[in-house]
Structure formats: C-alpha cells, structure tokens
Amino acid sequence: GMAYRTLRELEVEGLMSSQWVADDGAPRRAYRLTQAGRQALDEWISVMRERGRLVDAFIDQADHLPPPRGG
Image (tube, rainbow, N blue to C red):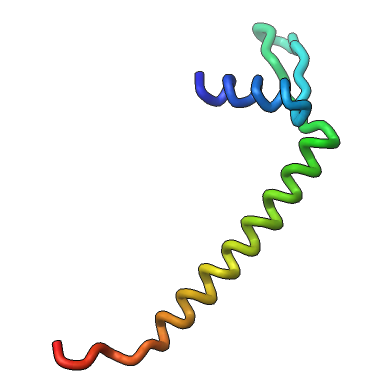
C-alpha cells in the first residue's frame, strides 16, 4: 500500500507517469519516470554520492585516531 501511495504522489508531482497495461494477465499499472523525474533522480544520486564520500572520510579519520589513554 505505501509503495503505491508514494508512486501516486510522485505522479501528482510530475515525476512519474503511469498507464494501465493488460498483457496476458490482469490489468496493472505500469509506472515510468518522466523527464523531471529522471532529473530529480540524478540530483538525488549526486547528493547521496557526496554523503557517501563524507561518511567514508569520517570513517577514514576515525580509523586513524590514537588509542584512548588510561582506560
């Protein structure tokens, strides 16, 4: 249910389009990214790559911290 609600919201925002398809089975909705949806996805991917780079840099620095003193 939640996935279809999200797909509908994306469609309302113009990021997805859908149509009914009736191949050999029961009719179903087929969803596709619109041009705006593809652009939004590309932007999101860019943001996620940068976040991944920042996480990797943080982990690299944490791996090189000196051990705690005392204990």
